[in-house]
Length: 112
Length: 113
Image: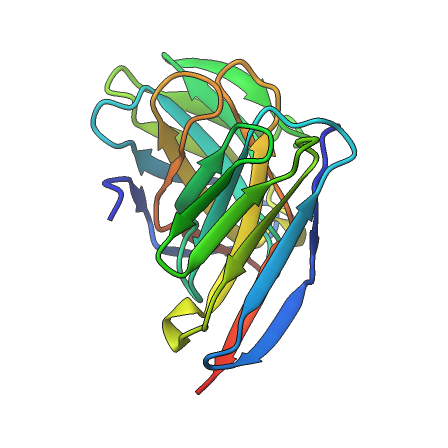
């Protein structure tokens, strides 16, 4: 079945440093979504990418979808302590109503 | 907040027992998906309900079952609980269609002893 590999599993950064997480698939994706889960919380939708080579920005967050639509990245510039959490990529599982297949996530910790 | 609510928040059960978890979807959403999230893992798709019918199922045994009601709220039932069923159970509602954003509830933390 559909799988997505996400790296790294953990990232520890000093506040102000940049952070990047990568999501890779062996098959071409129709779209990819990114979610953030704060410690003790639930996943919260960040963004969806659909087009080949698409780049979207949300303040300090930059999301990219690869040209071949097989990989994606999330980059955070100048991390803050509020960025702490686990970032998941998720792809459509193929069901008619769009269930999601999640990566294992990248857990970000930020040292003040 | 998403408007998706789940109950109860926490639950402790004994191996072999049965449990029912509940979810109220966001207004206007007719699709509800259930996910199991073990500690340190990503959410795993259990099944999805659309207009009161099961509309897709992940790799979970039949002892995981569900219902969706006319008001689109949903239940997840798990029979013959096993220790490995201990996890956070997440409900997500969404409008119909593929590739749409899912709105997650706060989850139910189930502990099986």
